[in-house]
Length: 265
Ligand code: MN
Image (cartoon, rainbow, N blue to C red):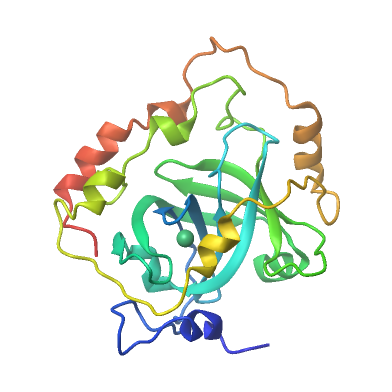
């Protein structure tokens, strides 16, 4: 196996960039972060801490709370843990150029052995974030010739945090930063916090990875039983169902809380 974060480091010139040099962190944490990234194409970077790095996927459509709904998650290179604290702008023309928002963060808890399951391409875990909660699956699809990045699917399991198909979309409902309460426009304008300017010398492979390819719905193997069941026949709650707990995590409240905190690290 190659050195940890070698792909991350190879994409960046650390004489030019203020981004953290990629090195594996000590200790076994369990953080997760979702960064909303308006690059050439808007996407959500989903990152799970594992073995001192952030395992990373670029999700063009973002996570869905609808049980069984598959969201294409393109596997990208591991990122250093420090990256999970970044919110700001990356200059146009640089690697990942655009605006980065800390859209969600918290802890994740794998079911089973996460290292083994990651290798097998089927992770089941719980998220305890400010926006995302409950049980989720990440399932790798069969690789195809010429494919640059592994394609995975992020799928919400059916639990009390799942939403009906016609319920409001969390992405619209909670669009602001969990770190600073800022909108993408405010971050792009550098409002309310110091400059977070990162530079890189390569074109955005991550953006390319997030670009929608031909639609594929066939997992490499069958997803774990609960996902299979959920995907097949998720009981749909009536639209008028009482608001779920996730709906109560109002963005405004999160924003207020965040504004009191020191500006993003
Ligand atoms: Mn990205």
